[in-house]
Image 1 (cartoon, rainbow, N blue to C red):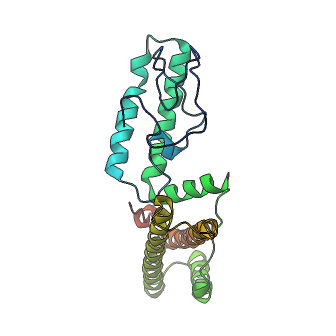
Image 2: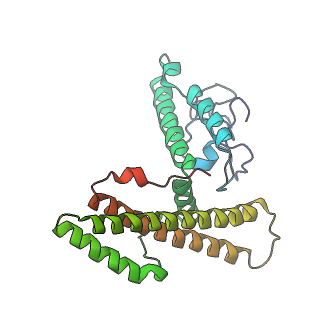
Length: 244
């Protein structure tokens, strides 16, 4: 990424004009004529902020490097003597860079954000119980209700602990499925999948599979947290937070 270039490798259909001198700035964060900082939030998505394609398999070290680079360039201390307009833009850009980095470094948030970009504003994906575990989930809910009604005995505690471990393993399996779908998505983005009339259909099916996996994962996470609460343990101890 060049010294003041944003959206490296991103093609845009129109060029921005500098808010100060009305010169063309194109894909730059700083006007090449008057050197004023330019707002990013008007058009940048989080991938674009760091000059990255809309892929799920990101190089996290490179993402971090670009984050630190832009964080330094937009740091408010560098604009203490600038105009109020420049100070406001630097603060907005800095906030955008921070939010974009927090989202993209988290593998689950990254998938959710990508789905939102591809489909427009998407509300939270509702949890969905996996069909093959419906009967088991009913038994878990009964056990949880019993745990709320009375003190846990050793047998019930062991049962809930074992169930939580099984569900945590299932959640890891769902995350592995998400990784596999992500690789298929990236191949589609890279163009390594041959262009064909059904390309859009494949894209849609991949997004639907991502949403399905996220819905199941969200359900499993809720039940795992409920089990941890019933056991009197911190649910955060059992948060799955894979990086990929």
